[in-house]
Image 1 (spheres, rainbow, N blue to C red):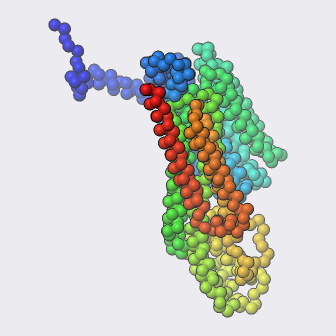
Image 2 (image 1 turned 90 degrees about the vertical axis):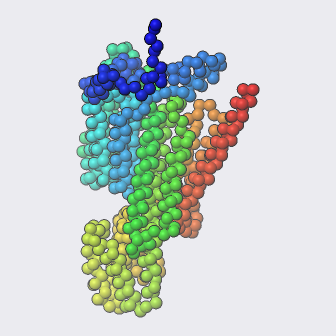
Image 3 (image 1 turned 90 degrees about the horizontal axis):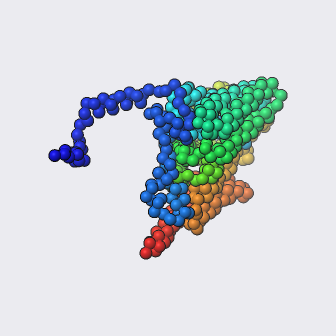
Length: 612
């Protein structure tokens, strides 16, 4: 009698045989080993099926399923099924580890580079361009050709070193002022770092081209990729010597021209030669992960703002109802940024070769806008905390306004002395204002000097002391105030027109401009993403896209409120900038979800009608 094969019930829970356990342990041991070098073309041509390399992806028809495709007679419907169900690999741990260097750089430059005027903003954008497109070039190689091996890990180490090089120049990064010795040195180091990055990519593409020669597929586009990287690296090396000579103060612009050319070259060759395209790669996932990182930077920035609010709990206002609402609204804005992006970005689909490339590059202005927007959230949170403290100080100044001139002078100096000592009592904060020791010398001198014998110089000194107090409080709350290029020769602190916080207000007039402009750009980009992620759009998709464009225009119009000076000043001095953004985004999110609900019901009803 033939033996019956064991059923699932008989084998469930059965312990593996000693031989099976040994095989499993052997496989685990093998998984810890690395080849010296593996074919970078495994992802495309499946030339190597070793355990150490990527597993071959299923074809489009395999991903969709043979039964599902064969049962469809209409060619257009069949193409749409294949389009909508493409399976791609997930990001590797090495790629995620590389992303950590990106977020570390982003956190560093944001924490040390304050955007207080046009020049500092442009400098920040320049650094972000270099950082983002260097990440993109490395990622475009990794998602197609990265296969774990000793060689690949050595190349990764160089890319990690490049990211560290970027961080090393972030502290004094200011290419807009090439007269500074630190600027020239930073530009030289940045050029050498970019050269190392591109030469490394040139070697990687060259190795991939060597393997392509064996299978006679994709060699020409890979050679073009490699040549472009080596040419770009050579240009960066040439810029290093140009910066050293110092004959061309605007030569740094060439770096950004080369960055644009090399990106265009890689994307165009990948579109022309389909064999090295981004189809069935995890480009969508990589962009989604980077978006999470950029939004996560906003959370880090807001936690810093919360810490600043807590610092002001003694002589400031600390936590109040208005500050609590502002912080809550800022957190909700960041959360809604996450929802707007990921709720409308389908995973596991291929948008089409050209569309996907445009979609990927559009993430640059989108991510830059998010970075500026969340930095604006931090700035407005700390500014309102500072204003609360300023109101406390100003109230004390106003309460001594009816005294005699000598009493007024002494009371003013007492208030300044009290707050200066609070700001710097721990000895570690005296570096915030370089004038600290000047202040502690000037205050006793002015106190002993009768008001009737004061000269114009004495009045100006008191005016500078009062201004430095407010600047010190601004620095205490994390507000970086640029020093005036020229000191005023006369300041009357007793004049009704005297404003010790004028420089601080000027900073936030600038923050106001890029804050609302950044949110406008975010929604413009979300609208463009909506056009790219749906190949076949219906009227509901167009309504959702239009809604995003309308909101983008709304934020840009809010920025134009400065055309009315009175309304502009009142709005800046109020707690409303962040709550207004939160309210607009919340209403937009609900409208978007209602549009999605109507679209779903309409499509479901149509499908049920057609199935009858």
